[in-house]
Amino acid sequence: MAPPVTLKHIAEEVNKTAVTVSKALRNHPDISKKTREEILRVAERMGYTPNLIARKLSSKSTRSIGLIVPHIAHPFFAQSIEAIYDEAHRREYDIILMLTGEDDGLEAQHIQSLLSMQVDGFLISVSETTKDISIFQNILNRGKRLVFFDRVMEGLDCSRVVCDNYQGTCDLVTFAIKNGYQEIGYIAGYSNNYIGRERRHGFEAAMTNAGLKIHPEWIIEGGFSQKDGYQGFMKLKGNGPLPKLIATVSYNVAMGVMKAIEEAGLTIPNDIDLIAFGDSEFNHFLNPALTVSRLQSREMGRRALDMLIRAIDLDDSESTEIVVPTELIIHDTGLNKKIERR
Image (cartoon, rainbow, N blue to C red; front, top):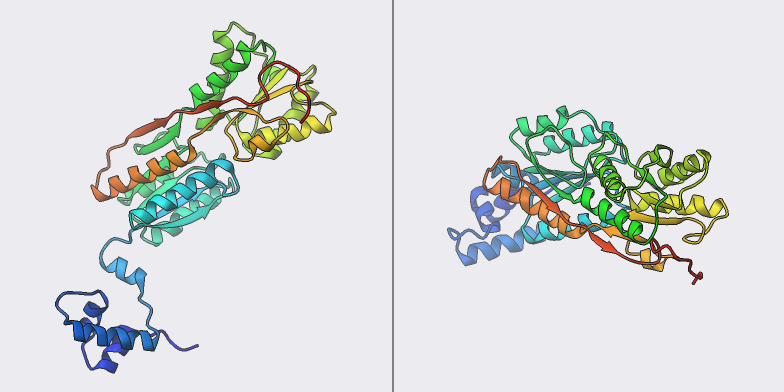
């Protein structure tokens, strides 16, 4: 493989200095149109590709942002990542995406890698197992800007964009209660996780406000995946009589619960009903479609990136929180009435 063409190679070919070649390739006004066109023709003929990384580092800004998320194949993250990329492109920033797969050790490795790449800032949605804040504090200690979105790490003085986890869950469960449900269970996230704790508090508030009994055996803690939903329902089933309705901490968890309910020979909503925090663009194709508390995924991603770029451009370390409201989307469940399968 031939070595890459450098500015020096082009300079030798056109009998100019490397500085002149560099200015011509950057369309600098010091270089005449004739000289610039000559250098561009030679650079193209020689197959020159600019070293963008070196160029950015020489300007002391890479105009790049490290984005760390648990998953891509997830309704919320797929939409929010797309919005982040769109907004970054508009603002002339590059995004370097890293996935943790809910592994806090891998998350720490990704942060170190991005620091070595000299990214200007970080957008992070933490893994469900993350507990140690020191790796995030290291980002701040290095003078880098950090914004959490959706899943946040508490105990740090930095900005975040979150949905209204508490109120969204409270509104969702209250809707089912107003439709006559009283015996309600909850497949929850981990209580040591910010969104798991906030959504559980929203569930408990809805039950308490309605004067309904909270059954501890009907609250099952776990993660946010389909597997967690499946296992959560099986554990709930093993605890004794089932509730009349189950609310879940996430849409993926609800999908796991649906599978387990089907395997148990039960139907939704006729035998047991199901509602979920979160949504999917495929929800309305389900039979039945779930009533959900929908996150504004794209809005959260866009606002998180905007907050980070403002902090970078203004060299602003002041922490800010944006809480984005959820929206109750009513479909076939949570209505406390039997339906015919479509």
